[in-house]
Length: 569
Image 1 (cartoon, rainbow, N blue to C red):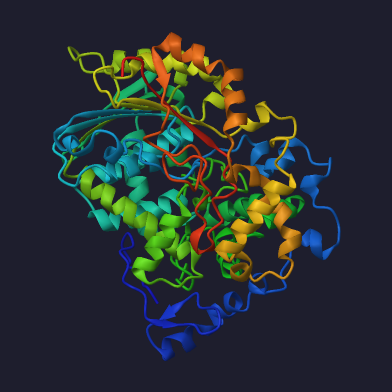
Image 2: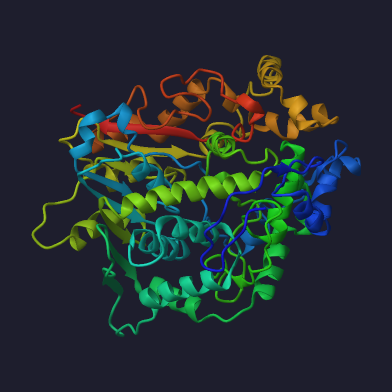
């Protein structure tokens, strides 16, 4: 089995001897497998892997709670929502905001770029964008990162400082620690000490009574700079997190209460119903342990709470449906699994190595590229004037080659969003773009939350043919598959096909054309950053989604993506 060092966690490769029954764990020898059996037995024989597994509501022959009128809005999102749950991991797969190949092309190697992640969430999209720059990039990339959630802002500052700083662990060792700081609820002692040292460095300070905010640039070794402009309450929360003293047992108790709330069992079962049987096992193991590791890896040394996933009172910060797989494309994770020859059923082991690979590459680039990060924690509508106020004295007004406004349009609306940031787009770059997406657009143009013909025989038959071609029934091995499909794949079957008519209605309702005109922008006819919907190539918006290999985990994504360009280009 793979081993973890007693430092931050630099790992060795797994063995080559696969467990013949579950095919989820690799061993270096028969003796190693025998010694590990008592620990592995429950995973190997998990009822979640059985062909006969069905959700609880099917076992009890009743309607699932999510199709009744009983649950309140809070029940829809679980116990974490009652505390105002935080979206620390994002719910859209990481994307490259630059997509150089479809825009600036080979000339980008020496070009300076400015990127604005105006409602960033975590830094995964920053990571993907920098990782796709030319490997010999010589320009300067200025990156503004803003999120008004204080916990997100604190995490982003810590992660960037760790990844950019050359005076410390190397890129790979740092990246492995970062995977756990991102996604694991528990840390090793060395990882916990590493986190605490950076927390003290950034947040252990006494603020003057009259100071409304803190402006600072940590002294980092290397080629990249990090500056932050955080309000007083964000800095005070950072200090509260640093000074908190709860144990891992206390934190795990609250995490378990959120993740396994009894009144949420139908929602939880629906979430895993379309997973492959062994992927269900891996998912339940992660939910139980809270630790992102390959199956079979010892979690004994993970005995310190990750204070970046809990409040200072040991309250788990996320919703019960949050998971790393909402943040990274499963097709890319599968490529990593194949490249490293990992067990097919080890879902979170593949995730572990994929994210580690992305973060290792980012750390290597951040330590040799010239990157300038400016971090804020404020309302998006106040960001533009603050950016100009906090730039170095004498510098020209900052404009951006890409602006990413995330899905803020779902709450703010398109006109206010473009009015707040549209004027910051770089007019001298013909490839500059304003990027945004909506997760709730269909609910604004349909009372049922789906197009009127979404459950039509034509849609259903088209999706069934798609499923048959991908051989999904054989892969899931679920005898009740026909009964489960309405609750899994069919929930958003309309998102698999042409949604342009309804989306046009949404854009008209939002006043997109008028808002673009006021901001001096136009909508791109063909996207060059991200396809309009998941699973289809850029420019082929009416194509069937790619669910090759039976990967249907991205079919439930009903988000729609939009790009705006300068009026003059």
